Amino acid sequence: MTPVLSVRNISKSFGAIKAVNNVSFDVHDGEVLGLIGPNGSGKSTLFNCILGQSTPNSGEVLFKGDSVAGKEAHELNKRGIGRTFQQLSVFPQMSVIDNIIMAGQEHHGTMLSRLMGAPDAGLTEEAEQLISFFRLDHLRDQMAGSLSYGQQKLVDAAVAFMSGPGLVLLDEPAGGVNLTMLEHLKERLQTYNREHGSTFVVIEHNMEFVMSLCSRIIVLAEGVIIAEGSPDEVKSNQRVIDAYLGD
Image 1 (spheres, one colour):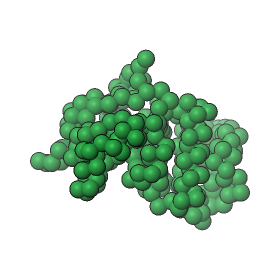
Image 2 (image 1 turned 30 degrees about the vertical axis):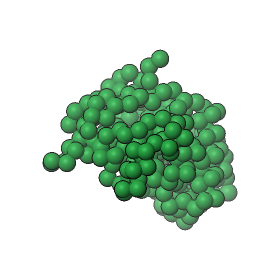
Image 3 (image 1 turned 120 degrees about the vertical axis):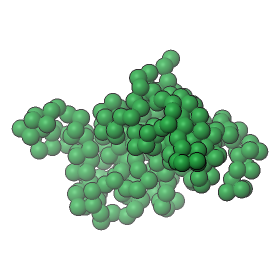
Image 4 (image 1 turned 90 degrees about the vertical axis):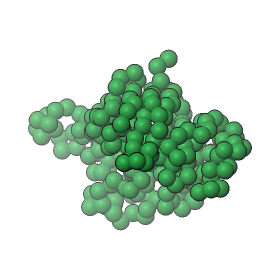
């Protein structure tokens, strides 16, 4: 079966520094893959190469067998790749419902049809379903900027899922979120994965979160993969222990 995502021999240098060095891996349908590593390991650079925000010096990225190298974020989104950002991407002066509707509009019809059609492009019902799924009903009409950081993270996740993506890349979803909200976010992501079969790739510093969410972990250090396996296998790997102790 063709992997959902294939990263093939990706390398990226900044001057003499090799941030990512010949990294390859596959992500399979319905999998929740964690990508971890100490500071400066190349995680963010690799993510940016996958998402078209940075051009690798060599290698390729395939989504369901088709090359997506160099594609911009909106093109990837139309192909079925969603993402959340390390820095929140919600519009603070828009309501929760309008943030989510706006995220889905570019996937429905042409620019002319959107201009001539209903203001919500017929997306209110779909947005309401995501609001309910992430249990944001009581915040539906509030301005996103008035919410707590954790609540905005949930809105950000709902925005990423609005296009019904087959692959979602989550960039430090646990960052800055309190423990109660974090447990809620994890449970919602697990439920979405189970109910919809979506595939996730998660970059995360919170080891407890990523180890309990992901079925497989890839560990980067100094731009190369040093370990790969189940959470238990990775936690007991001496190279991983040494890499984190040396961080």
